[in-house]
Image (cartoon, helix red, strand yellow):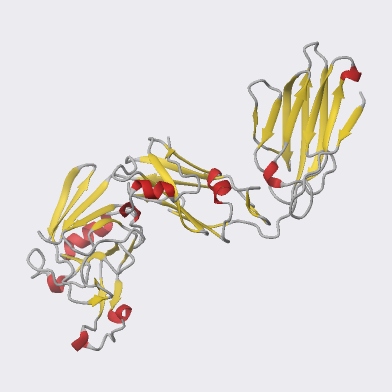
Length: 397
């Protein structure tokens, strides 16, 4: 069996993607023609183009692509005349074996060994929230943070997969070039008690001219019971529901107002859909955030050690214990924006809640900004979807 080499040079940053190798053809009495690209000996194949195998005069019987003995996944065309691999890891050697058969029963086999282009600016994932194996609330977003800015957001977003045991509708949103966030549709949330898996198939994805994804990443976590909390700054009462059933209620004291900065009353609790973000026991709360010395009591200075505190925003709002204001809870709003609660109720909430639980607060004239903590449900669904690079919804499950 003789071989013919077709030069298929493609320009790219740092080098070309190597020669495609073609074996077989009419000169071999009905043997199929098989073309593999990159060809044998290619030294700077582009990781994002992957491996392609095409066949003339027959169909593909088998394609094997391996790196260090591990197989690379790919897709076979419906007519079995073409095969395309996924993206490849930068700076790695791959082996390819492709076999095709003609209608007359003749076979052609092609072997190729090549090396992918190294990347001078590898793209890696520096953080994923939630943590591996974490049990979270039904409002929990998935936040993926990268080590460098992503220019080709479409390519990176295509590499992200979200699967859940129970189907949900969601979408990705890019608040910056280094982070992308997935959340479910407004008001729907995750269904409780199921597993969610994020798969980021980033290896070989071209994020910019000189940047390729280095590794794939998988993160699995669990959605726990549905915890939906509602609180009103007018009725001064909080209600906690688990899987739709009321399990506890208690009086609160919300933000008293009275400190206006740039048109915003920073002492008012924000109205909107909050998500629980973390727990502190104790939390150190101080007036230093507003530029007031804690010792300056005349101008509202304070520094307190607060037990059983669950954060619900980035502007200093917590659901926490406050024994000193039990007299006001259910009667008067006297806090700096937090939801002051009886110590026993705050301790119960601290132990009961997950990160990502939904806390809906109403009654305040100060609205919650969509980027104040994890308050992403404050953004309209249409705007959220358009904030994704692909401008599309995603169905999990």
